[in-house]
Image (cartoon, rainbow, N blue to C red):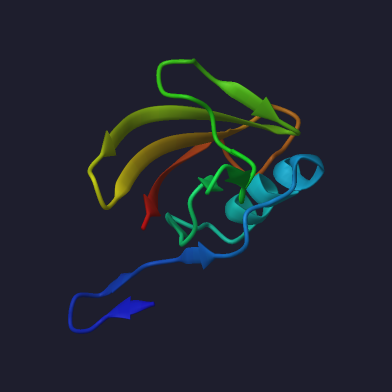
Length: 108
């Protein structure tokens, strides 16, 4: 999505949350598409039922491995209506595409 007259192009993914067995594929997709923004439109649970697998690490838990990537929760800011999470996504040495990317997750 290009922001008019700014020259800035935002790349983002708006998708259903991945299953536990497809979480590594999700992070690969984020990496391949060079996404900088993840928009999550559902909560993790609703009325006691799990609605979305938590496919990101807890803040301050350090780097968590998902397939050929590590994801680190850099910052989390939760308000009554939104959650903002900053992540660092790092390609492990076996992948030649680069070393890391910063991204933001918005939870509405």
